[in-house]
Amino acid sequence: QVQLVESGGGLVQAGGSLRLSCAASGRTFSSYAMGWFRQAPGMEREFVAAISWSGTSTSYADSVKGRFTISRDNAKNTMYLQMNSLKPEDTAVYYCAAVRSIVVRTRTRDYDYWGQGTQVTVSS
Image 1 (tube, rainbow, N blue to C red):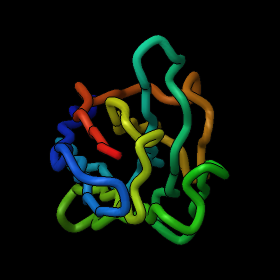
Image 2 (cartoon, one colour):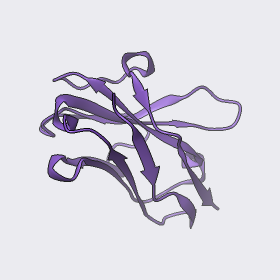
Image 3 (cartoon, one colour):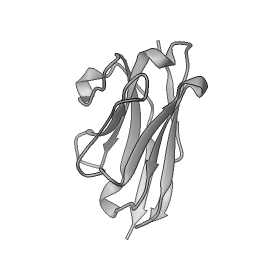
């Protein structure tokens, strides 16, 4: 069982930056592939970025490539999402997710554990 808690969301102007964190419980954090997803009002939850258990492999949605960076610190049981050059269309609730896997996972249905979400609002 893994419990996930996101933090770091907030209100930022377009062009600004935010760093999201996802703190995980449990002693086997390094056995889990992790991902970030987001959901805007009236929209389906969508993939943002994912990282392998070791942190050596990553994947990004085309809409965030070059602007967002996913990383993890297994010693701290924490995953991060550095978001730069934010745009109003990045506004959404951001969720972190975990699945026991050694490879990167990019589909919502692949993940077993989810956090409660953190709101990111980008004003124009």
